[in-house]
Length: 307
Image (tube, rainbow, N blue to C red; front, side, top):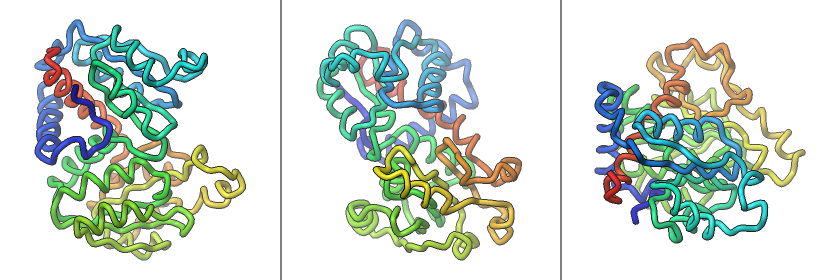
């Protein structure tokens, strides 16, 4: 059974095909409105979420399907001690496809090995978030016209940021991309990503703690929040949470066609004054996420022979 746990579970060709389907959905929504009639998506969210859970649900409804599931571990049998493996087996009796978010790295992988239906990783701890990456890729493609040949800056929490890790892995398949890593020393990109993805694929990158010095060179800026839920020490979180705040003043020297992305939720790392700037793409990114999840649901259900 085909599942998507890591963005690298999808080939570059498959990602490009998903983007093409998503763009067709945008142009011809009525063509897809009955594609999943009679099918059920189970959203198993063991960790809080607004955008990802509702995006998956909206995606399935707009494909003509239905949704079952839960939005917190407390409302599931996990609160009684049920294992992820058993949950996956149980839900396989009720639904055609699963979207799972879990605070523990590897939980969706365990689910995929025990389910008899496709499982989509909707975020596991600080590890992976492949469908957010698909949303990011569609946004970059629509804003820049290509997924090759630009400079992208990742700013903020690069240590725990699963969206950053997934996107860098995906971009390693494309050509002539220069990466700029902007973070405090305590939140640098992990070595296993630098060595296993950037170095391994020959992607040039630089590291800095100074956003303003590099912003004029960027074509895409990917902002992230400092994730308090990943810290063991509240004191350390409070010290680092306001490391980078993007303001109109900091954009004065940025390119006029800079694309500003953020996986959301935003806390205060992007001033609300930027929301009306034509370079702000983070709410477009939310909408693009729905279209890419629609495309992925279609792909996995077709491969499973369900539609």
